[in-house]
Image (cartoon, rainbow, N blue to C red; front, side, top):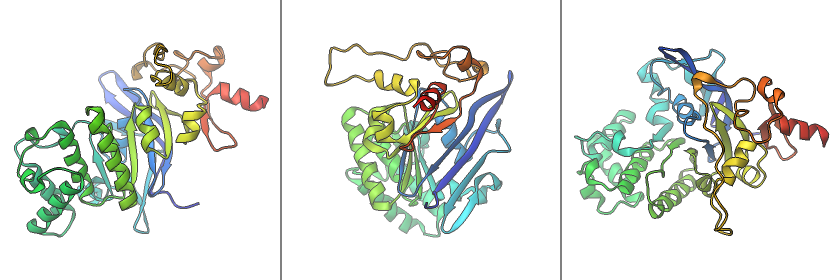
Length: 334
């Protein structure tokens, strides 16, 4: 089996608050291979963005990582222990070097008083030895590649002069200009209309093929995941509950939560079918349920067992993994 580009093992993260330690991510493990697109899905508050920011050590200072947590980046024939990178100079490999990130709201990510082009030039000069002229040339080339019209003119404009779709494209261009090995895309299409959304998705798929780049694609939209990802991991209240290929998980969901997310999607072949939401609300991290974290909303709970036993991952014959006592029972009976 080939070496993964990045390997996350037993990631557990809490935040220091006035109410004490609040667990946001609980024992999360996954690998992403070079050139692979992995979708991380779940409702708001599931811990998706916190997990992604951990790969770049971007969580705030009140974040506390469990000592057993491990993140290993394998790049240029070397293994980098991410948690060992203490100095800013050491962290450059995961912050704009081998890893880049597209944030959910690019308007809040670009400095409003500095032109888009100068921000691109600045990050290129930080992460390379190129001069200003060469950095400008690369920046304009990347703006061209992502489909921004009149890139030389747009280079000198500010974020507020760009439409939402163009800002998102500029963010993609900026993230890709350093030629990262892994691109983290945090809800990159949420604020876009469907036409621009489709264009951004097609762009990212093309870039994966061209640069052989891996992507961690964070979204709550399973329709987007079906179009873009190779693998998918479903997250709920800080825990991964199902993992597998997109085909496996979307066609044959094993966890009741995954099934609920799919049932909540509108279907073009049955427009009269009422939308069926997942009942209830995601609990507060301050009041995490005991046992299975989904037991307070699960329509097929086994009762006392689900309220007391934390389910472990089981793997079916196709390699699909699920953390559910019901699935374990069915596997044992098969």
